[in-house]
Image (cartoon, rainbow, N blue to C red):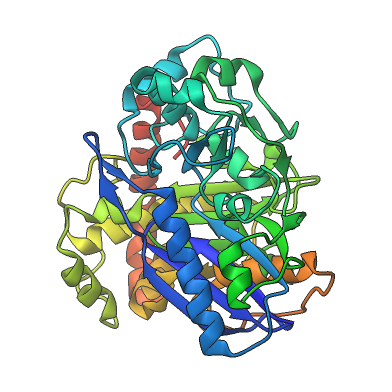
Length: 449
């Protein structure tokens, strides 16, 4: 059996092939293609779909295995696109980090439809704010649309799946109630949301492959299963939560995301943590705390300098007195000061949750120096996953479940303890940081991060 996972990330697009045991045996990674329109960055779905097919074919030919049994996609949470009556894209995809919808987010928060039921702050990154922006700037395009689908789900729909939206992606729109597992009608109307497809939890089968290109090449067959996945951070976290359900997943990439699944909303602070649905749906609640780490580092140094800094062990410099980060406003503080502030924010999120071990994942978790700093700030040992592509592993494990052959994979990890002197310094700085963070939240109106 050959399984395929696709991860459509903010920075990179990845394809991984796995055997029935869930171990990745071939991975292809390329930068996510982007262009610009008059307002900012965009992606063209047709270009992205062709690239994903290219990567699947390259990986399959290099692997030399049989046709793919099942495919599952994961990726960015908020990005999406309008489709016409023939399910063809009507325009480009606005990425979640683009802030063209800032005024729309402000208007939605001030509207009569504003509610805490979504469990997540309505800010410029939310799909709901982008819907309102599209209504104002592209009304003819919206009028022609049959429906809206999430970018992460789009390849499966293009390959033959009945239109759907993975539930963890619905929760990132800012218009979905994760407790009731339903849309918030008044907020959809206020956003001017386009028609939406059925919401589906992972890893439900949503169709079978019909791509002429992939079938003709032999990489897939008309029996290849298409399985719903969803938001990349929960899908990556699911690989650890299978065997450590109380784990708190510290996902370090373009964004720093803390993820956990808990019994109820009463056990988490809404000021720090967004609420979502468990990756497989059902009872309980997922919580996510997001820090736009890459954005905050933009004013600190060039990418090459940041990479060199993260390769050092320990990281250069000594503990400082971190100040809270302001979303959307990188302020030019040094690299270490950004990393300290991001880690302090994660500590505040952790303290709003019931206790549990911290497991680090994501591309930046490969930096042992960064994990040492975060362990020192968090005052606890961090367990770092040795598999660098857990989102892909999560996707192939979901594909295995959909195919009726679930794999019992336990990702290996290494323990990164705090540095005692740094831990003591950050413990002394913690009360002052928490006071300033709470003051900043109050000034911003108490919205979640």
